[in-house]
Image (cartoon, rainbow, N blue to C red; front, top):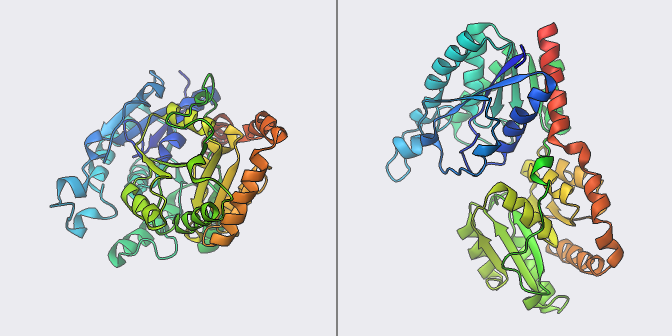
Length: 416
């Protein structure tokens, strides 16, 4: 073990299930020791998670200390039919974690003597814990933003918004570094807090190369000759709305550009599966669209490797964000159909990938044209043979590379 220790505060950590943010923290934990930093994890008790899965627990290095502090979920523990008093959910539903997190964190600081504190949003309570521990201990603090906190009309609840605005200001006043996953998000905050602009840095999301090592493509439930179009992860009915896509597919079938029996469109663990299924039925696609349950992470990677076309939906509300799964998509080398706002950061990063086919998420006509482009390209043997080269081009997004950058950030702080 080395002498450099970092206390890492993260709500999304195994066995929590359902958030791609798990991978960012988990892989920092895995790769920081290779860069002379020992992670100490401060997470929440599993009772506070909406859902749990054991599939990633084995990925936590056995030597890493993980403390799961007292935490509750207001919806589960204070609510009736998931309705609960708003005052118990400030800054968020997991506000009770602040008490347990601070107490457990102080014990870790006293016994383990870390040099740096790191916390990651969302959940906002993680930053509240980081702020409190940094103020009480005097340790330098790095605040990681996987998403912007105040973004457009989010959060919409006036009281919660005021609390978040206060917390966001406190983060920028007291954190030594504020790390974002996209340059646009960082620039937004430089403009919002010009006095603290120098604190804003970018460490993009990425993928874990170990998840691909020895992994093989799988096409479970896909018939011979069928095209598997796959969306892996959460769909938001408002800002990742597949309505125009379904309309385009229905029109492509109607015009006989593609045979209905040849298509399988799978939404893996969309969270809002009922809404997606109802929308598919509206366009007469119930026999084409499949809502699939969550599966273990490596199996999800296998399914991506076995897909013919990977789907991403990203409306303009998320223009400053890039879905974490994009980097896994890029690593597969598979074609990607990006249904996005053309001005967003997701469109920007995918635009450098030669197997990317883009369309405005709100334009059924554009999407239908892009689906036609994919169908034409997919029949080309040369296009299929280039898959390995396309996968290699994504190596710069490996989580190992991102951990090097984060370790350098920590080292700068202890050297100041």
